[in-house]
Figure 1 (cartoon, one colour):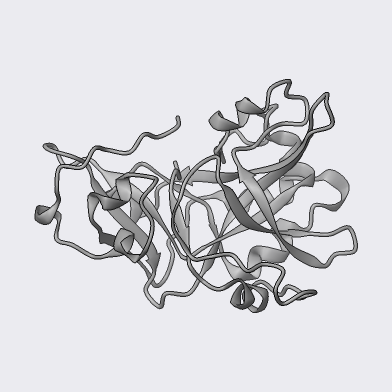
Figure 2 (cartoon, rainbow, N blue to C red):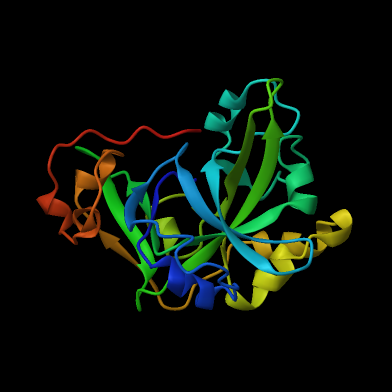
Length: 241
């Protein structure tokens, strides 16, 4: 699964990275975030009806349009690639509402056999941002409340991630961004192949402090590298299934 990630790249740089048109240079002045957790607002890239890409804030935890209670989104932070096309919660979003979720890195916890799990920061070696495959939905409550939300698609671990965890988020190659965002016609079969586990050239996994375990902790201390033996006894993070 993917239950925690980071994004400290300035939004202005994301406009170039993801071929976005900057309508207002001050529109997305958001602070760097080193410990993004479920139910928080997250940046996402999606296609407008005219084909142009936009940078938006979405609630992390997908709320299907048919949901009676938005709290269902607390359990919908990830969509499994193996079942996303059939699950009622995700299949309509897969056909018509796909997005990119920019990240600089993500965290996963490895069982060590004793003591707290070892957190790892997984990122590109050159520090550049990348994108998760995401889905988004629009929900409107009976009182007119509206929420736009998202989920990150996950798949089986590749060679790098198998050393840490059995699953990983789907990281899309830049050449696949256009295909993933092009959801006209409500078809999904042509993008399911993008969700298979693939090795990522230039990616690395670095052990970091258990400081990141607490979702309230922020700042560069979350990614300070450490040796596994140097871990403290902080509590393990709470994760959604």
